[in-house]
Image (cartoon, rainbow, N blue to C red):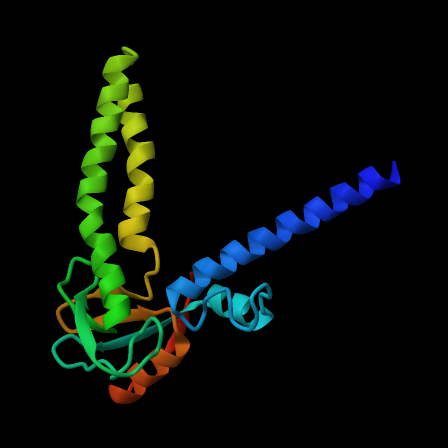
Length: 194
């Protein structure tokens, strides 16, 4: 009986270790200072978890004249930067490092085919099982929501909170980047809600 309990405890420990390792390996691929893996192969640090839960920093700048710091707003690396349009009603391009820019562009390019695929699958399921059009619409919505999250909201580190004819209010996930953006544009930053 003791042997069975020991086996169960060992298999549970092994499963937890594998889960943490897989999370750590995923985080290593992300190349961000707030990735889950920060110190060791199977250790999550408290500071990293707090950094991922931090609020957004909001900074309002004049709409016609603002500059971005010479570092990536996601990974905070310096070096060659590539301008990437952020999803908003206003066309604004934010400079990202080449790795982060490539990742963002890849997910956005993948978005339209994924949306079409989700709608086609919903349509096919609706026809195949002879469901009502309302059930088909709900299936489409359920399939489209993860696609929208993947392409527009996942890994978002810069967003536009509001804008008008005179000013634009940016929100930054990384407070260090927000501080540099504010210093560069001679404006102090505030903390916005999630």
